[in-house]
Length: 244
Image (tube, rainbow, N blue to C red; front, top):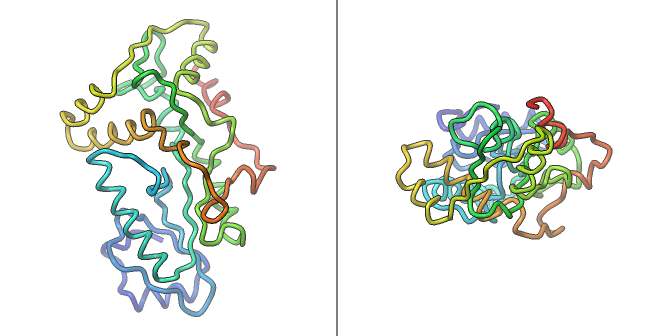
């Protein structure tokens, strides 16, 4: 429903909530205390997507941004506001067209840079599929006050295996350049503003494994692919075909 950092006051938010069944806002831009729903069943859907902020091991400057998300999430829970948090992990459009190579515009065909040994699992989903799963959440009682994790098995890869998948498609073995974590952290510290955030998030995903390094307990989370097994999503394998 738009940004709330310069948005309506608390009374008008309550009035709006009385007329709608879903409120979606950018979590990082909303600094006002959320208003409790009034007059009807309302679900607050923070459009943060990305990772579960309670399960990440991010370094600065990403750490501070994610902490804000966690703080606001705590306020929502404390206020008893019905909610759904969608954790879609990584967007395919950001990662797969370049295979996460900085400053590239197409997937590599000669050399690929890999953080550490590439043996960390990450989840990458097509944006259209994320939308499809999210719409399913709106009136599903199984997702109320839960984290929904979009982690379909066919989109969960070790980064090294993703590189191997691409090599098979282009029938070529790439030169693999492995960057130790110490150097990755140094690159983050020395990078310009914004780029340092991107690098820090990449560190969280591809070195710390923050998409997959925790168990999803029924008390707080559900898996989209298990709730909606009939949804046909695009796999990473299929997505890469367009670049061959």
